[in-house]
Image 1 (tube, rainbow, N blue to C red):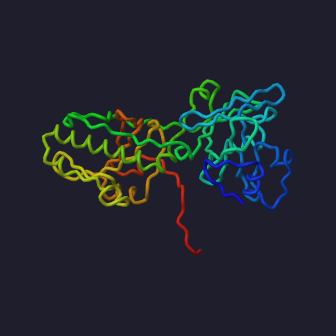
Image 2 (cartoon, one colour):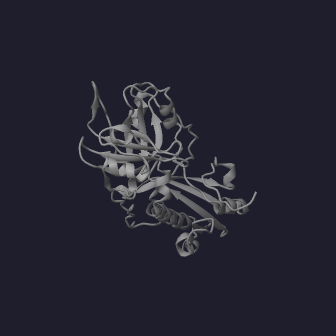
Image 3 (cartoon, rainbow, N blue to C red):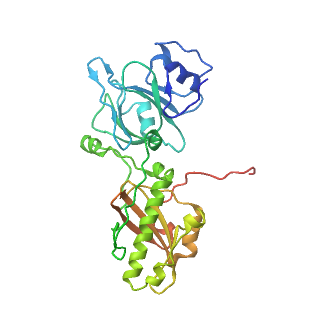
Length: 324
C-alpha cells in the first residue's frame, strides 16, 4: 500500500487504498471511482478533493487554477448552492481540527499528484450553482523550491535602511467576499507557512539586527550597537525573545521578531514563553512584526509591553496528561 507523500502521483484506486482500504473500489463508478469530493470514513469533516483541470459538466466549464502564492481557485458542482450542508461545512472548515487533502492533475487522464492540505480562505457570496471558493495550499512551500529571502550587503549601516516602520493594522474580520474582491484576493494568509519556514524568520531577524545597529549609531551609542546579541541563533529558541538590544540609556531591550512575506494583517504564532516574558519585562519588551518581506527589505510595526493586552489569542494546541 502506498503512503501519503507530497508530490507523489496516485491513481484513484491508490487514493482509495490510503483512506478507505476496507471498502470495495470500482473503477469509473461509486464514491472513490468517480466522485470529485469524498468524505473520509470515520473522520467527520475530513475530505479528499480529487480535481482535474479542464473538466466540464453539461454546458459548464470549470474555472480553476493555482496562483504563484499557492492559492487554489476551485468550484463546487454546478448544482450546489450556498445553503447546502456540504458547502456550509467547507466554509466553516477549520484546518487546525480537520483536513482536506488535494489530489490534482492538469489533464483529464492519468494519475493525480498529491498537493497536501487545504485551508479555507474565502468564497464568493454573489455566485451560486456552482459556489466559488479560494483555498490556501498549506504545504505549498514544500511543493516547489523555497528560495531564501536573500539580504544583500549594505554599504552604509549608519542609515536606517531595509525596514520601514508603520502603525499596527486595525483588526479585520474574517469573512466572505463579493465577486470583485474574491477575484482580486487570491492570496494566502501565510501564517502556517511562516511557522514552518525558518528561512523567512531568520531573514526578518537579520533585518531587525541591522535596523537596531543603525538606530543606536544614530543616537550616538555605537558602543551599544556592537553588543547586540542574536539570542535565537546563539541559544536557540525558548528564551522568550530573539534579539537583545539596548535603549538609548543603556538598559536592555528584548525584541521578539515575527516575520512574513504576507501582509500586515497576517496572523502569527506565539509561544507561552514569549507571552510570559513580555509580562515580566513589559517595560523593556518589543514585538516587531516584519511583513512584506522581500529581497530589498520589508515593512514593520512594533507592539510594546504585555502582549496579552494588544493581541487576540486563539488556542491552537493543548498539552495533555492522564488525569481528571
